[in-house]
Image (cartoon, rainbow, N blue to C red; front, side, top):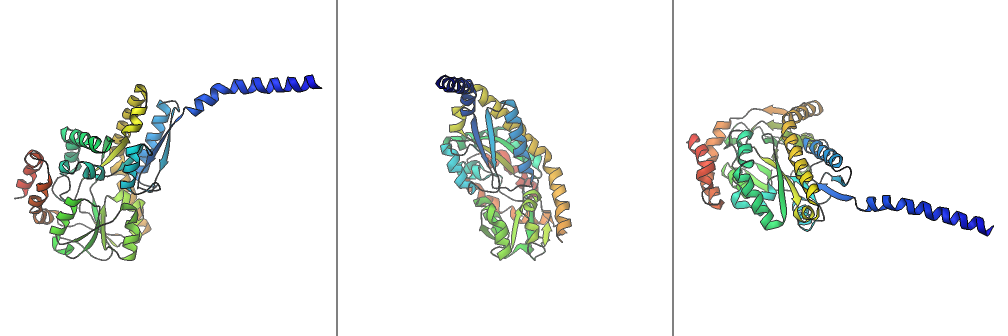
Length: 335
């Protein structure tokens, strides 16, 4: 009897030993928490899932990506703090990482000025984008590892039709907490109200603000068509998404994983740029079917002429030479 018990114990011990290599591999799996304030249903969520797929495939599961959508890990600035210390490893957000840590290099906040998103693409993919990334990592320990180009930002209102600049006077309007945006819209006569992205729906619903602006994709993903009546196709601002990466996390990886991670971010960022127009159109159709969103085509040229004087105030905050190199030609084209 004792001999049988010993045999069973030895068998169990041998079985446990054979499992040790697998336990070690599992313990070494690297977790990557990837956060965004944007909810499921938009182009950003699609691109994040694409990134998860290609990175996990290329690292053969050595890096496991966990997605956190809809601001569940906190508002964007809270996530930046977590990125700095490595508690969160990645974030997909808007320009706020640049306006927070490299504000003197941010020249993109004048609405109606830059003609299209290709213009923005040349800037963020060129020397200016590299300068912004270098300044951000120096100030925050956050790497801007990729940029995606967004579709034009549009204006939505609860009950006001907007055809020209005279129609925004006194309009209480949600804007992100970016100084240049607020200066420009205040110049047009609006009343800028800084509210985090995750709170836009509730603020419109309760009347805290009368209007908001964004590309179609996040507006529809956040169901803002349920609490607004008019959609003005202003294309007033072409902006970008920043793929932010914790440098502390990046530095902890072996070189081959660093290379794979950066190439996967670059591919996913370009993928997001490529799908934006299709997704925007599909979601606009969805919103039209789900609600009575009335579409208005405003006078963009009138808006452009009205906002250009704001550039003189806004450029005071820019680094020397940026206005002459990147912006002056567009201002003079309006004048």
